[in-house]
Length: 494
Image (cartoon, rainbow, N blue to C red; front, side, top):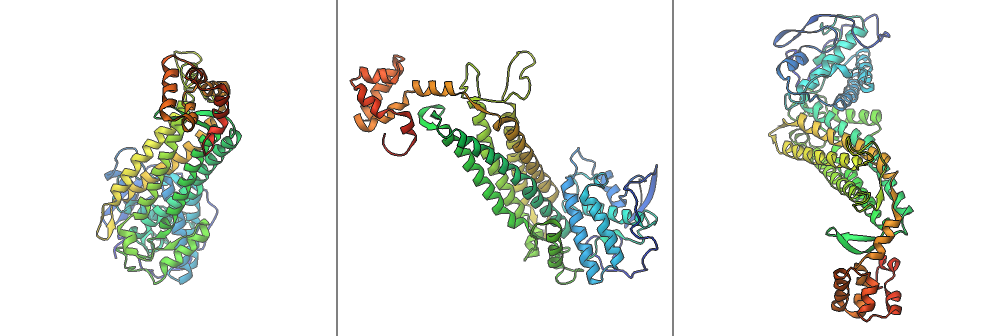
């Protein structure tokens, strides 16, 4: 095996622990210029102020495409993964314990974000994510070498392939890191954000449970309902969205680790994937398992495609919620003006006093972006040729982008719009009083055709519904008995 081969690594004889182990040393390098690093293709000059090595630098040279860098969440997930692998390798004797501990210490720095600046690679790289895996391996190795007083770039006493990547391949670690990052993003950020928004909407639904308003279908007046009932619809949509996201999590908890290059597990001991998944579960507090079929786990990203679809579903629900809010808050004089929305900022550079539904607009744009991201993930998922899907970087980048912006937008929308929204109750009462569609209550009593005549009369001559009904021969007693707005918000005939 040559030094640049990332498709699994066997243990090398231990030369003994360095005299100075795990010494306190701040993260960072006080160095200028470049240093020489090597890989299987030769020597590369890398910035002396960074921990990465030759393969990372080659990627920066050959794949300087756009401004899209691999999400930090992927590298922090890699921190959990590399630490788990080191623990398992140390326990099994594939690595000396001091070396496993050293790798684990650096992995902890990655998890904590102390080494974020060491992961500069672009999304647009090899489709397997090999360059990102080697970026992690090189950073861990050089940082570990620094901690024990060695020479950076020497690959001694910690080698990026033989030690950090022991029993692993880019082809099983990158998909595993993808799924770890996805689970942490959904469980730790997105679902809590949606839950907070859902609870805020539920509080409004309860607060406004008895306020009657006119419903609208086809953007035109319909029969009444309560504001609480209207908001309960948003709550139910968010409940469904959370249920769907939660149902997709098991597919993301099945990891490719242990499959190495093509799913056979070459150069990894039996049970390695199970042992690593168990360590990951303890480290993250999330339940991960080794995928029962590594060939599917490495040749497809079906779990991510399914999970991405749930983010699309959430986006649809949030878009409807936000769009309703901006319609209901339109005005203040010439719109619906049923909701009084909080003013986050001046709404116009030319029109003084203008307030716009900016939180709703931001949310709707986020939803459109997430819908587009899902299309990319789905198309990437279809490209699982033979034993490896090689569209992984763009898939996880788009997925994590969606999860992040939906979580952030959910909190912003809740805090700066939903929680501060107030009802314009005089406008609601006026609309109920003027509504023509209350005539629906008379339909079971006098028949559809006669009720329609009353409605057309009221509209044609701009009459209140009651006046039109009285002109049409309906007694005031009957009208008052049948057309009761609160009663019309419940099942059954009025």
